[in-house]
Length: 362
Image (cartoon, rainbow, N blue to C red; front, side, top):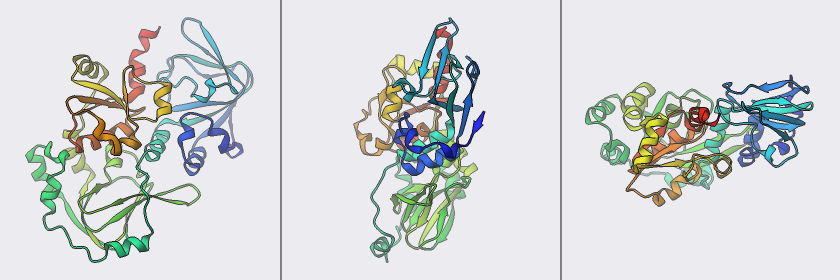
């Protein structure tokens, strides 16, 4: 039975993993887009084998988790185990039934993954707008932006015919200081390359508080994440100075850049790479998520630390990257390819891994 989520204290949610990694603003936003419910004793939250797009946390009461062999485990709201989601596997490995009247929160998996993705982005300290306008005033345009673009390692892996088509389809866009190029919450439509000028990445929390996430300089690109994950823009990009952008439409980005770069593999093919020694599993989720449930023998490098620590990854082997649903691993793989690493994606993420291994757990 649904209840009013406004009665739920965000501080209470901070005890749950990985919700405890979110900022207060992100936690509030997640709460407003989640649902809170109650069950009477004997009612079922979900059945074993069911597919779901939600993560459930136990807020109050007790719930019984029973597998197909009849073994049951009782989860109590005030226990350490209840900090983790109620059977996070997909499909479910257990049937969850209320032992006592219980209260829970249901969180959309994709939404949670998006929140965690931006929570893990580099938290650069950005100076004030006025200071940055003074810093960048009068800077000259790069005279050979096409060469600069081609020097990026990810473009060196694109077939020449795709590169030729990309340059034919890139469109110039003049912009002014203060102009908003990307709006948080909008549908992704373009990939952008900064030919001249500077911009900043802004995240707006539920209370309207702006967080400056990064500064973007000539030669850098942005906007690929929403195109890679097919999700809405999860941050805004605003010009700090007058400039010139080169923009590529989404359909062209997918056809010319994403498809040749990001190699998705089903579990059986990914496991063959691992067994052959050609690649290792790489988990880009938060430490709390990795400790709770991960593919055995995975390397762990959170997405938020990837830029700073990417040089720690040996270059003499490949990596099969995964997160929960594929959102963070898509972005991580693109960044790793940019740095010259050989990367594959686990199709469907950790949820697909758990689902395919489920028959072995019977």
